[in-house]
Amino acid sequence: MQASETQPTANEQLNPTADIQAPANGQLNPAATAQLNKPVLQLGSKGQEVNELQRLLTTWANYTDYSGVIDGIFDADVRTAVIAYQHQMFLVEDGIVGNLTWQALYKGAPVNMPTLKQGSKGSAVVTLQNVLKLTGDYGSTVDGDFGSRTKAAVQAFQKRVGLVFDGIVSDRTWHALSKVPH
Figure 1: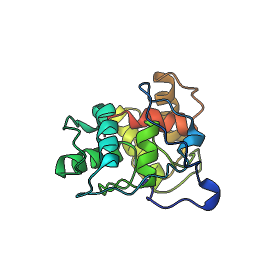
Figure 2: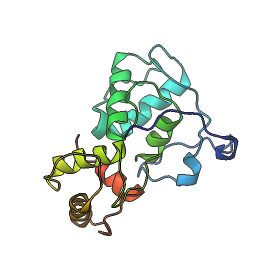
Figure 3: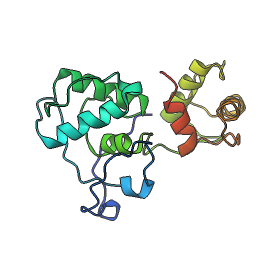
Figure 4: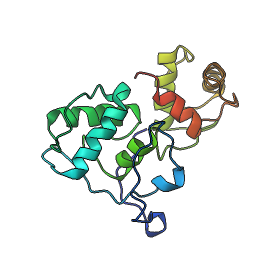
């Protein structure tokens, strides 16, 4: 599933004085990422916010292969790195850094992903099944239907990566899935 880059509702606003920097360990209070009060950045953007974006892309270089200079210029290399990061985080791959991309960059994990369990259906299940195929845990048809085979594949994946293997895909499982090259 690809989450859209929408603006939050009024009750999702973050304290604008809480201008946080991504910590070295990538851990951030999830409540702090609800709305980061950051500008939308895209090809051609310039300035301090682009410097910050470039630093974050460097932090997550294992997802982006970004090793460009930190010069405050949103060029084609930055756009390519943003798209790669958006892909790994299951976001719309448009190269535009909106609210959800900022959140994912600060959190170092997917944001706005649905909780999936047996009986779930739709594009998020297709995404899940495709990634589980890459891990070798899911050998069935990708059909967008979270049935018993998908549940077994999720449990096998969860067990292998050290998570509670309950077959429910929530934040921790999405985070682990985002680390799978896909």
